[in-house]
Amino acid sequence: MANSKYDTHVKPRLNEIKQWVEDGATDTEIIKALEVSRPAFYKYIKQHEELDQIIKEGRTAKVKELKAVLFKKALGGQRVSKEEYELNKSTGEMVLVKQIIANDPANLTAIMILLKHWDKNEDGTCKWSNEPAAIEIKQKELELKREIAEENNW
Image: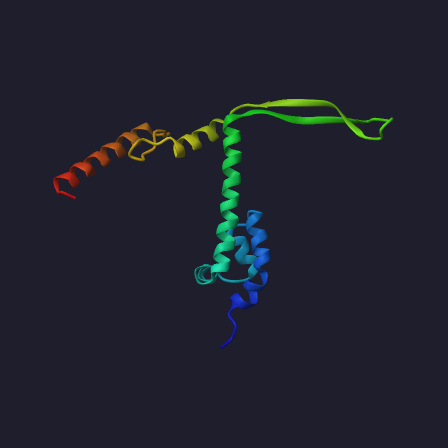
């Protein structure tokens, strides 16, 4: 039985794939670099736990980082934007002589994204929307579904 492209094109490059995923590569970029077809790539992910884990773990780590950045952007705050150093001639060491602090405003887009995903009603529906009428319609739909379920003894 001939080797599959997994054995020749993917498995030998698992360490590279791990790095690509950690660097934010898309599936399309990985597929192109590996010179495999899209269907084959997704088949390999399903069939080979090692590849599946590399991709899941790399993406999960990046999602955590992105959440942290989004949260910081939403809150805004202060940061050091510039530092100036001078050489201390007697010790030969560089010494911090000036720090410039920048104030970053809260990012309204980041705030909305977080509120839409984190601030939910008791039934799990979102309290925040660009279309308040859509929220109301969804709530009424849920109420109707509950009523129908109760009537049918579900």
